[in-house]
Amino acid sequence: MAEGGPLLSVRDLSVSFGSGAAEVRAVEGVSFEIGPGETLGLVGESGSGKSVTALSVPQLLPYPHARHPSGSIRFEGAELVGAPEHRLQRIRGNRIGMIFQEPMSSLNPVMTVGEQIEEVLQAHQGLDRPAARERALVLLRRVRLPEPERRLRSYPFELSGGQAQRAMIAVALANDPRLLIADEPTTALDVTVQAQILGLLRELREDLGLALMLITHDLAIVRKMADRVCVMQGGRIVETGSTAALFADPRHPYTRMLLAAEPRGAPVPVPAEAPVVLQAEGLGMRFPIRSGLLRRVTGHVQAVRGVSLSVREGQTVGVVGESGSGKTTLGRLLLRLVDGEGRIRFDGADITGRPRRALRPMRRAFQIVFQDPVSALSPRMRVEEIVGEGLRIHGIGAPGPDRTARIEAALAEVGIDPATRRRFPHEFSGGQRQRIAIARVLVLKPRLIVLDEPTSALDRSVQAQIVELLRDLQARHGIAYVFISHDLAVVRALADAVIVMKDGTVVESGPAAGLFARPRHPYTRSLFRAAFELEPEPADDPPQGGALPGAAPGPELAAPPQPAPTGTEGG
Image 1 (cartoon, rainbow, N blue to C red):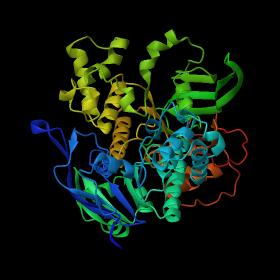
Image 2 (cartoon, helix red, strand yellow):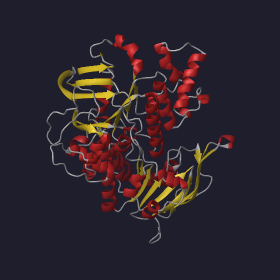
Image 3 (tube, rainbow, N blue to C red):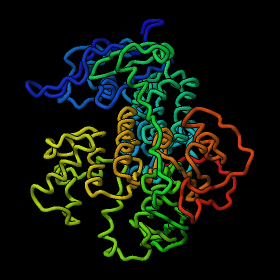
Image 4 (cartoon, one colour):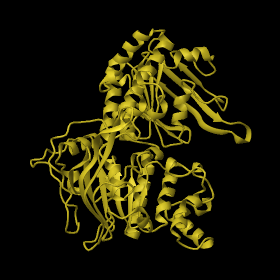
């Protein structure tokens, strides 16, 4: 590499998949440079070509299905496009490290964390087992993985999401790379864990002199991390420049759209006379800990403890907290998908002790939308079968034209063309699949929907669209929502009441406007600092729970006395 030249130079890069009439051009004419120690942000929505561009650098695209019709990729002065495999092997994982989007699918599930780091060290540096083990321990300490000696012997499934991402970073750093490519390294992580991972990457860049190529759809992350930004749309770079200049004066309409894509707006007003749809008192759930050869129960984990809440018609109650705080378990308890302690009343009827068979006729009135529509929608069923399944189970409408009309109406209401109803889920984008998941419950005309992280894996612009859709549906139909999320920007745009959970308990609750303006509990303030990059005004009063606004007389959202929480990494 010439003195003072770029570490990485990409010129007129194009990427095609397939050939002939089936050829798809995923990237077209992309050019950029990264200097030593520099961070370049590559941003755009899903399908913009940013991950394909990143995978092209170490030549990790699935050849022969992918090819480069044009372009050059020079790293440290050496051409990588068309380079022989033995030369690429010396560069991958050695001079160029890669952090993939989903660590749980990137780490080998049948190898311990230590074995996976040692494998890289032995392959590239020829270290013997003891030396590789010692180096692996140093790396886990460098990425500040808790209890590194124990984590060397842990399997990926034994780690939280943030811990697995730290392990993935340790693997990428094993051979002291000059360039680190991070492909959506914080997607679906809690805001506090996201801040920790970004802080770690920034610290590693400064301490080790790494160049960083950061691929993300989140412009807030780019603003914190990058020196320069390339904005991609439809496989092309539509705007590039220094981070400060691009955020101060975006020129391209697509860039301006991305910057304006933050979920906005106010919750749907709840009438004072709105009836209570769901009321829960003292909900709790314990999971057994089994150990030994015979897997005997040796203890319990209290996933949810003493939670009470009420939700009125047309109201949205936001449930926030880190992974492991008990949010999802609470949602499942509310819908009687799992049994636990406490009492639940739906539309005035006590459903706590009802057998599951007796609950079945009521289930059309309370539904759930899951986090990941890819796994929630059967890949073997057409969209019309997925949306119509509930109609068939509950005997709603006559088979044939009547049910087809209901399915088409539900799809149209969520913004999906009814003419596409015979397609399979994989033929739709992530945002469209989530709309189909909403149509699947909407067709039953429910009174209450529990939404479990429905926007966490979506682009910011698509998140804003889903928020608008949910708000519109609520205004038209008076549906009550329990909205579970770690994304506080989305909760602020939708919820008129919020409860904050930590370690299975409610540490703070109340009207959303007041809670966002002046959070009282230290844990809530730490969440807000991570999400909004601000320091909330310190509270003079002790942390407390409170009644949900407009709730019918009855139990309050009270939290038992808690010690001040310490920061923990969710997963």
